[in-house]
Length: 320
Image 1: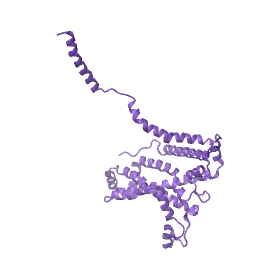
Image 2 (image 1 turned 60 degrees about the vertical axis):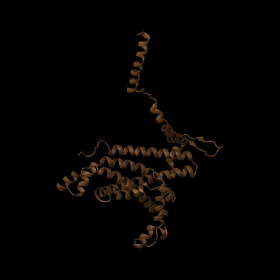
Image 3 (image 1 turned 120 degrees about the horizontal axis):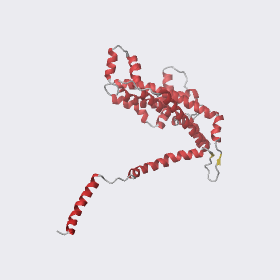
Image 4 (image 1 turned 45 degrees about the vertical axis):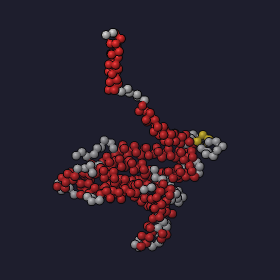
């Protein structure tokens, strides 16, 4: 047999070994995963990062939106103007008060509902759906619903109910007075978010073994003692998470105040985002409006960090 024939017979064997080696260990292209990430990353940069950076850029100008006008660079003047802006400080005070009251109401009512629903053995899904329904309902829809409920005169459902029961003798203009308007705004905020808090708390409660409550009951612990010394410590991390999430949402209140009172009367129900919206799109003061948004963002970060440091400093859930 000639050498050429032997070489021809050996080449297919080498090719088969090379083919098997490549099949067992495919060739890795390190750039392929980034190609799949590129479309989502591009959209994120275009619709999230770029507007944020451009808004920060606008905050340093007396920004003019009308074509042909020149936007003057003013540096930190927009931020310095907040120091003497009484409406800004009133809006921030109202925002903080709204966050504190609605978050407390949502957490207390949400936890109470979660404890009650967790004990229901029949139609548990029905109750979860009913209480969670306001969460998935549009803010616009529920805001107009509460405008109808707190309408002045006999047409308002609240006035009608209070007059029928003899609680009041004359109709109340709920949304025309700042003190009563806040009752409507707080009520909407609590009612809208308590279902979300309930679902989160309910998920945490369902992770607690029922044998622990049975043992505590045998030891003589009453209902309040079991909640205080067992339930609350066992879901401590969940409580902390719900507190942070609701507080961030509370500082971002906007649609309900805008549609129910518009910040009036005389800015008495103004909150940070409605004031920013009014300055930017009402007075066309886009530079000042952009500066307001960044100050609010910094406040939210500071509040969240303070809560994380105060409530989460090394404390853990009770182990079982």
